Length: 120
Image (cartoon, rainbow, N blue to C red; front, side, top):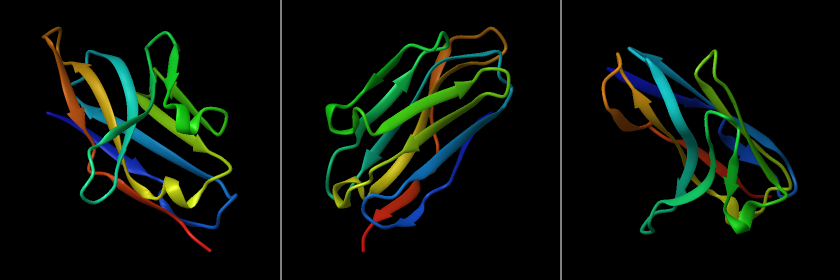
């Protein structure tokens, strides 16, 4: 089995920063794309940022210039540095990864989510 465990959420004032981290564990042969998504109550989950195993990145327009995604392939971790946070960034943030287990097919996994609240 593969598990994705997020950490780093919390309450921050507008203009502040938070860093989210996600660690993948289990029977992992390789990880392709890793990413962060977010979801507000009653809304669809939306992409925040993606990063490939080679380090290519893609960001939602709403976070470009403020958020930075990075990963450590040796440790199977992905992080999201969030700066200049706005109240509109308040959501539950989910880690996502395409994982290949023991040379098998790629499968998609989700973390349990971590709450980010931006409020004064």
